[in-house]
Image 1: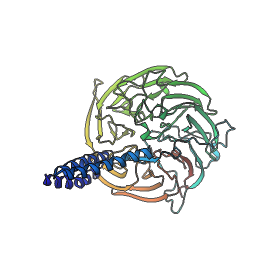
Image 2: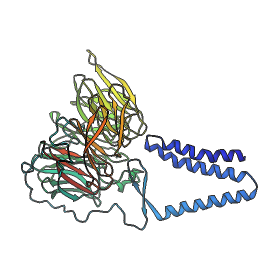
Image 3: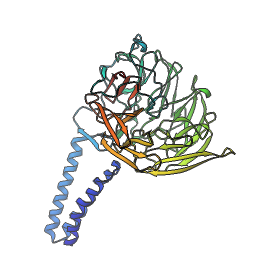
Image 4: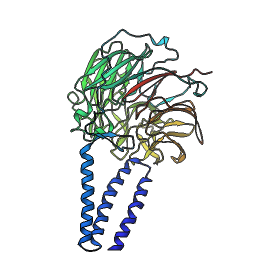
Length: 521
């Protein structure tokens, strides 16, 4: 028995070190489970090695540890994740909740600010992650050497909870979504100075008010997740609990509103809706993603009225935003679902092809098109990233094949971008690249955390999880930093940056900043 006890003692640190080496950080939660099992096993073997004296000693140790655990949870409360690694964050039970409303925000409608034409370097960006909704911009509109030519901070303001990004209008509005108290808000700011132009409020709408129905949602924080979409003088939005709004761009007044639950008979995903609405103008609808369970999960709503045209039933929506692409000479919607990737006809919603993608953990990254037939989809949580080849026969039937599977690009919250034969992204928080032909590792470099990034020509702009902004050049062998703003956001940042020409908009769940990037020399 003594030998078994010594083996148990040795196993503790060995298994603990092995768990810490796992690249998928989510699975490091098993370290806590292992330590509990190891402790119980060791105490049991310790108690059995000799007589009752040992048993009494083991019992005292056990009761002491139990007392410490009860005391810990008695004086601390759980407040979600402290990072994308899912490590928990705790606060004193008697301290003020971090879910506080902002008291210095105005929500009244105001006169419109200076038009965007007077904001040097600004451009219109109507979609999440840019024109193609993939975080890729083909040409640099700014100088990437921020050491020699530092960006100019235009404004910095407090903002409500939420993980939304920004879109910008041609007449000077920067639009995002935020949580202010128990109201989800769509807020339009002046691109000139950050002042509030208008706010549309949905009172008594808050993801964490629905925690009992969405167990564990506190881990992902509170507030809206999706980013608005601008089209034809209107703003289309969806909140974390499924409130769908069509608003006038100029004033924020309601054109129509729907609810995912009551109007479309759909459930709210566990972590809240995060998919940005997709405008399909030539077929007169906005595509909305819904529940993560099997059944109707994508809805085409008429642009002017919000009336339901049709829906798509699949394994459930995920947390990635729908895109529209021409693949294998066919115009189609490409949708990342709960356990599959599908292509659908934009005119009718008819499913053209489907390919299984096992694992019901959240799939967040955007689809990337590699060439005329192939696409890349990436995820983390132990799921494989895939290169899929989609081919259409002369008879019109589609076949889908996997070119490769890879666990070398584990994008948890972000989207990998394709550059010069590489897919570049944050692999469990560390900047990495894989060969797009084979899925094998090319390089793995800086640890930026579970942030976001944009590819601008041959430069990568990284919003780190801790709030820093980093710009650098890509090469076949790595990433070379050419500038950094350490004084950008100062707390956990999961929001994607928005690039509107030379205006860079960044935010998290506490503040928002606009920078004017240096002009190309």
